[in-house]
Length: 389
Image (cartoon, rainbow, N blue to C red):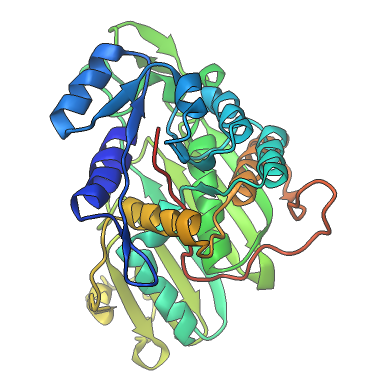
């Protein structure tokens, strides 16, 4: 993801288009520096993409005033230490999620960045997807009336690794290495839910390790110590109930890898990453269940496709541009390290819920010493992104 989405499809795409367009009509160009462990691999990437700067010395890069933004796409276990170094160096921060392995660490990062006065952003890429942007417009227009519930299905079958190689790395299935679908997906669900529908007030989750033994990259079997599926119910502010299933052990029988159904008093929508179908109240059929007769009505035909009336670019790239505007001209940015901490909190409490069998209430997340204030109302994507990695 760091290579494909953030470097090639975001940073290099922005560079090749002539930079980021600012509010005054001018453009600011970007110049990346690659940071990694292997000099040979860095040189190969740099030569392939015409990148002039690369290094294996993160400390030296952070000490160089040429580089204004530190972008972190490391494994989660290495993220906190690197982000602390970047904050201490006064760099703007843009990072993948989860921002830390624990909520306490995530909140500490937000507090450190605030105290240092460094601008910071966390990837909220799903909000920039065409399907969810269409959904946001429906919400803002009042299409749903009073929203009642959200139902979501995410996932696909990840091969066990024996007769066919797995599509995901083996560490994803080892809790000791930071794996697990709750840590991976609940931070996503948190920002999707809170920005579209309202703050997550409680979570009840049931985790499962359906495939207990998998085969790793080296061909040897290993015990899967992290969950590969999670079934969760979230209570949102305003009484909305969200039920989201996340699984790497489900075969896809839907139009897209993730789909949400939103039901309201005045209408419903079924939304994927790209598509969005609606059924308004005055076009809703009248189903009658008769167990003695086969159903002949084609309910799929009762839905209307929302047209694509806009050009939707890659969500990672769009968010990068927003964050660069935030850094350069102080454009708004809601998707900061505090928002990232809320995602880590939801994952942590989801794991606790599964372990204890209890519904867990989620307190408001604020910086230490600040006055508690609610999370921002559901709003259009605002900003977040980065420049050197």
